[in-house]
Image 1 (tube, helix red, strand yellow):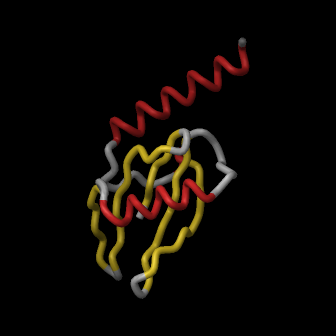
Image 2: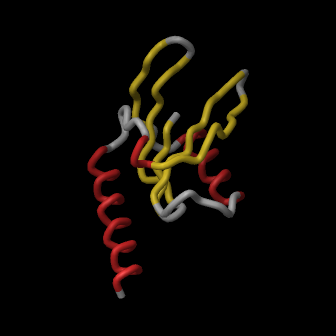
Image 3: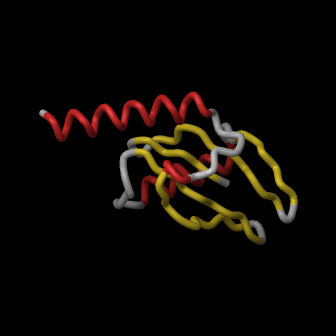
Length: 100
């Protein structure tokens, strides 16, 4: 599962592979999103303001695979409008932080 996070808040997420089967399914609520919220509450390092959290499920357990850059992540069935909006906000904030 690929989750996009902006300022420690889940923006959008998607399943993309279940076993050997490719599945593009948007994640909204439920145990997967609850797990992501628990992970975000327990970590204190983030690669940037907008980033991804890759999570897998194996034998009924959820695991974090990586925290990564959103700019090279697959979007799968994520809400692209939300990713673009968060990316634009992040870019403006970084620009203003550097130039003000």
